[in-house]
Amino acid sequence: MLNPNISQYKIDEVEKMLHCRDPKYGFLTYKCPECNTTKTVPLACKSRICPQCGKKYTDQWADELANRLFAVPHRHMVFTMPEELRVKFEANQSLFKVLMDAVSNTMQQMLKDKHRAVPGIVCVLHPYGKELNLNPHVHVLLTEGGLSKAGEWVPVSFLEYGALRRIWQYQLLSMVRRVLPRSVENKCLIDRLFREHKDGFYVYAKRRVSKPRHIASYIGRYLRHPAIAESRISEFNVETNMVTYWYVDEHDVKQFITLHALEFIGRLVKLIPDKNLKLIRYYGLYSRRTLGVLQKVLTCLSRENVSVKFKRVVVCCSNCGKSMGLVGVTRLDGVGGLVYEAWSGDSGDDDCW
Image (cartoon, rainbow, N blue to C red; front, side):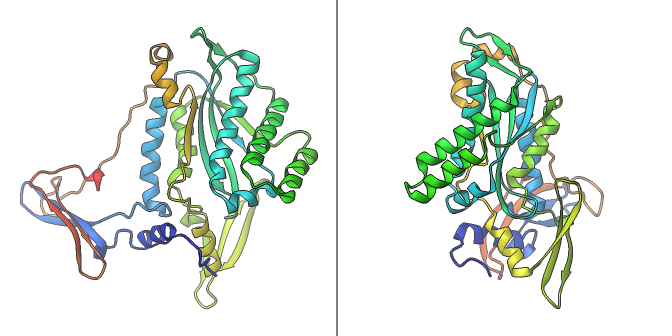
C-alpha cells in the first residue's frame, strides 16, 4: 500500500506526470506565418518522475557542465556506503547533504595533505539502486590535480585507493555521527561499521575522463531521470495487477522482480527526491565562492569549449510545410476551466513553457 504520510509535493509530481501532454491540462498554440494555419501542441509536465521530460533537462545540464569544466584531466568515481547505514538516510533525507560534504572533505583531504593543492569537485547524488531500493551513492567528477596557494597547477594522476577508502569511511561516519541523535543504537552502529570495515568503504574508481560531455551526460541523467525507464518494465498482468521489471546485477545477469502494482508505484513514489533536495553540488575550484575569488588565476586553465545547442521544438505547418511560430500558451484545470492564458503576435521561445 502507498504510504499515507507521503508528502504533498510527491503527490503533485505524480499527478503532473499522469497528465503529461494531455490537452485537457493545457497546450501551446502555433501559427503559420505564410497561410495563417494554427496548430496546438499539448504541454509537457516537467515532473521529476516523468521519463520524457527528464531527458531534456539532463541534456541541457550536461552541456552546461561540460562548458564549466577546466581543460584538465578528470576522473569519474562512485562513493558508496554499507547497507546497514542506508536506513538512516531513508529516515532523514537531510543527511544527503552530509553525504556529499563527506565526499568533498575526502577528496580535498587526499590532495591537500599530500600535494598541497585544492581540486575541483562535482558531486551528483543518486539516491536509489537498480532494484528500486534506497541505495544512496555519489557520482564524482574530480580534477586530476589542484591549485596550490601560489596559484600554480599541481597535476595528480595517481591516488592511493587504500587510503582513499579509509578516509572516506572516517569522513562519512564522523559527520553522520555528529548529526544523528545521540543514542546507544546509533553509537553501536557507527562503532560496528568502523570495526567491521577495516579497509574502509568501497569507492569505485573509474578511468580518466577524456570527453567531459559524455561523462556529464552519463551522470547527469540522475538529476531528473526517474528511478526506472519504461523499457525495463517487461510485463503488466491486468488480471492480477502484477508488474514485472528487470535490472542487470553486478555479474551482468538480468534479474526479474514481480510486484503488485500498488507496491511498485509505492517504491517509485518513495524514491522521488524531496522538493528542496539538491542532487548536485560543486566544491573546491568549482564552488561559486572559489570561482569568484580566483577568477583571474583560474582563467589560465581555460574551459572545455563544448558547443551548447538547446534544441527548440520545430512545428511545421501541415498545409504548406513552413515552420510555425509560437503565439500562445493555455493552461487548463483538466475539467474545462481556464487557469492561465497568454497570447502574442511574435513567435516567442517555446523553451520557456
